[in-house]
Each structure stands twice: as C-alpha cells, then as structure tokens.
Image (cartoon, rainbow, N blue to C red; front, side, top):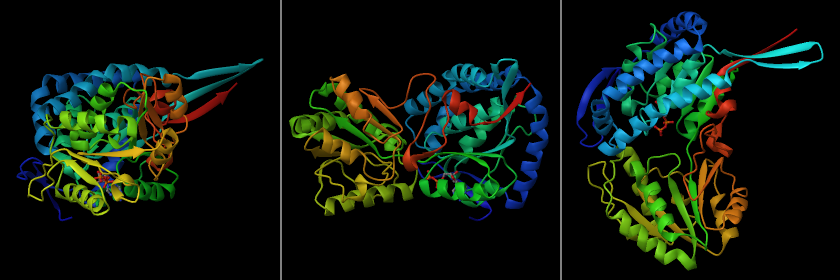
Length: 442
Ligand code: ADP
C-alpha cells in the first residue's frame, strides 16, 4: 500500500477522503505512549473508567443520524441498518458495564485458616484490529471490555471503513484521557506491525488467514490473542416446523447487511417435505427487500465466482441477476440443487446468496452442517424442542439458536468453535480474557 489510503463510498465508489497511512516506524512510538497512559488508566476505578465511556456514548446517540450516514456511505449499509447497528450497541453499553464490573470483582476462596484472593488485573496495551462489516459494533465489542478492564488501546480499523473508525474513536476521545485510545491508519502492513509491537493483548475479528498469521506472530512473545474468524452457518429446517417463521428467519438472516455477517445463514438444509414451500416463501420475501451494497469490488467478485462455480456444477438459480456491472450492489440470489462439491457450500460467501439443499433426513442435515473448517453458529427451526436441542448438541458450532438466531441471552459468550475462534469474549469467562489473573494467598 502507498502512504495514502483512499476512503471510498461503498455505494457510489467515489473517494470520500484520502488519508496518510501510519508509518510502521510510528507504530512503536504510538505503543510506547499507550504504555505511559496505561499506568494512570489502570489506577482509576472501573466506575471511573466506565463513566468516560458512558459520556462518549451519549455523544454518539446524540449524533445518531450523522454517524449513521457515514456508516451508510463508507460501509454501504442501508440507513435503517446503520441506525440499527448504532442503537443496538449503544443500548447494550449499560448491560456490558454491569457484566464486566461483576466479572472483574476479586474472588475469595478459603480453606480453613487460609484465604486466596483472585484478582483480574489489566493486561497492558491492547491492539484491536477490526473488520468492516459492523464498523461500530466490532470496535465496540473488541475494545470496550478491554478499556473497562484497565487496558489502553491501539485501534486499527479495517482499511475499508477507516473514516468510521476515526469518527468512533473521536467520540470516545472527547472524554478519554490522552493516549488511552489511539488510531492506526492502514491495512495489513500496519496490522502486522502492530501485532509485532510491544502489545500484550490482541483482539481481532476477520478472516481465518489473517487470524492464523496474528496467532503465529503473537506466539513469539506469548501475547494474549482473542480471535473470531467467521463462519459458514447452517439453518436446519426440521419436518415439524412453523414454515412461515422459518422462511422469515431464513430471508432476514441470509440477506441482512447483504449477507456480510459472520453468523448469516450460508446454507439451508431442508427435507423434501418442506423444500418447495420454503423456497417459494423465501423468494417471495427476498423480492421485497432493499439490501445494502457489498463492501467493494473484490468482495463482489468473490461472491460472483462462487455463484458461477455452483452453476457450472449443477445448481439452479431461482432468483437473482448476478450481473458483472461496475457497482458493488448485488440483489438477492436464491440457489437450489447445491451440493458440497461446490465452493459456495464450504467456504464463507459473505454475500446475498441463499443456498437451499434438499437433505434425506436430520442425520444428513447434521452431517452437511458439520462439513468444513468453520464452526461459528447454526440455527435449527422446529416445533419439537427436545429433538431440536438434541440435534443442537450434535453440531460442532460454538453457538446454536433454536427458532431464533444463534446469539445467546445476556451473560452468554460469543464463541466460535473449530477454526472459527480462538478464545472468546462476552460472559464472565469472556470478560476475564481481557485481564491478567493473579492470586494472593494468606
Ligand atoms: P476481511 O476479509 O474481513 O477484510 P482480513 O482478515 O483481511 O478480513 O482483515 C481484517 C483486519 O485485519 C483488517 O483491519 C486488516 O487490515 C487487518 N489485517 C490484514 N492482514 C493483517 C496481518 N497480517 N496482521 C494483522 N492485521 C491484518
């Protein structure tokens, strides 16, 4: 990458701004400043730290429309989706504060006269390297628990949404003490330099390829690494099902954010009994949607290549017009007759494609759902809750939803199994991942 970064409007392709990227030599200085700030930051009480963040989030909420417009333009989300993203994470802040505070209270165990106290201390400086698909949500999730725990942050937003990253950091920096949160502008080169620098914790969401490289680099100094690496989530439709509800979920979860969601539905597995009705309802609903744009041309080419490969190998396209025009837009595509010899059934698509496979029975569905290296989420729709729960336990995914999306209730972790994750966040155990555990026994 040259020393300039062109920030593009995903919807129009226009250049919004040109930024100077952070030089790799500068990253060392930034990290050292972060260490200096960390000393004081970690000495504040957790309530004091959370209050700075609270004030910044009030500012974000007050500027809802302005911030949403930036997300709409640079990332390509529809305005309702952009507003929805900001509201969801801003509204979740108090809950997160409550959870993190409870998780980090020292624990006391005693046996006879002896007493051991377990402390959850800050780790130091945290590098947060984030993707583009939830340009506020991902930084929020990867940075806020870390800040609350007393770490300082060097934040590298995805090169696709740098302006949004800078804007988000600016709201926070209206209140945070100097150098507690600093931004690095750039792409993989800057990300790699940051991982190699004197940071103690790396939080990352993105591709498996980059995640593995981060883990390898971080291993040299035994840095703490928390990774979420995408998914290939299945939606299993049981025979005994509310098909209307299932098709509604299938549509929303296949096409929301133009399919650019780690836990979007990437393969729909259904028996002969419900196959045709499901496809009909899915198409009917999909036709009415206004979808976001894809993030860039590379992403569009990847989605089109997967569709082309599937068509060559015998898939049927019942909805969609995947033309190779210059824009980043792609209207919803529905494919049937898909099989596991097609790339689209194994590797993450991250695009507006619903792939419906006819399975023989539930065992067949489980086998297909478990193929490949990803194991982030999965969803089962069916009225027999006991059978659905038993089936859920046969899936290798880290998170399974029954008649709902896979994210758990308050207090649950966000966790990828297999090669979809390494360590995790959310929940008592997840919040403690951002800390150094120490004990004192007396
Ligand atoms: P995506 O396909 O979602 O863009 P990537 O894994 O390529 O996923 O990128 C996610 C984030 O990781 C971005 O902020 C990107 O700049 C950064 N990144 C890319 N390569 C590296 C690397 N080798 N080390 C650290 N960060 C990287």
